[in-house]
Length: 190
Length: 190
Image (tube, rainbow over all chains, first blue to last red; front, side):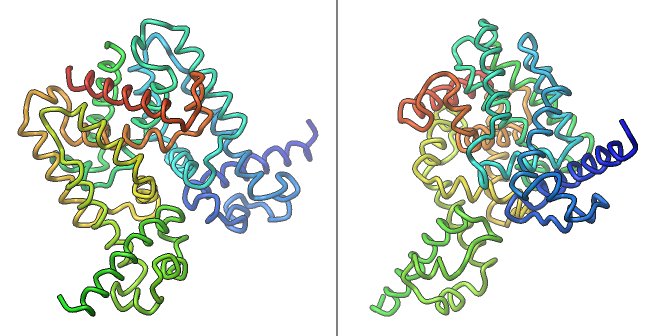
């Protein structure tokens, strides 16, 4: 790879990272290409050259996120509680990714081809794993794991603090993580 | 109540109903008082006279929603699975309410006094109910029930259809409702 190609790859990666932050913070409608350009230290024109439009940049950011989650936290049908815990860890480390997921049903409810495929693979893997999900449709189980993984991010501090813990503290996150793992253990234990 | 007071109460109720639709559809930032006025067959000035500002109208709409849910679907600490099913029924019948709840963490993450109080009451009721939630903090259980109740509305059609059912059909909703009730039964059974 020549130095121009290298520069271009680096610029695209910075644009994608800045886009995930911006879409997470402001959603699709509220995101501004100006701010993405500034955060990425790229010029606005290069964003349109590389990605075409704000919508297309959003799709590219979603594709990146879906691929990164699949690679970083592969579904483990033999141990869904541990998988639940790892998804929460990933989300805690990538709050903009969770926020992008939270904007989606409000702003872009029809899933893109990458998300559709990622869901289909999970549902197929769970369906063929048999016993683990006895009595619950695989698609509903995927919906539940997704929803539970977001529960920390959906909830106001007042609810997180309602049992007396500091709402966004490491201790609170540990307690919530343990509760998530235990809830999924109970769900799959039947 | 005289006829002017009656007219005023009716107008306020229409404004509140239209506000819930508008905030559900567009969120707080995207909502427009013009559209609320038109849908409520009220004039824009009357909305400012009654409610003061868009933010204040949003708070009034949230207060109304929180009170309506508490009254329509009271927490049943003796039968959380049945409660889960009823929350889903309420949400299915009031999609704008769910969408308001989904915008909240993105646009107005600090809960208002009515939501804070409603959460505190639920957590206190669950904590004192003891055995039902053995091993799970009450606040986490409330977070889980909230998240599970939204899972249908968060999920794209492609995921709802991944087990072969028509995504937003009555049959699909029945299957999801049964799965929700079963999941909560398992969570509280320990």
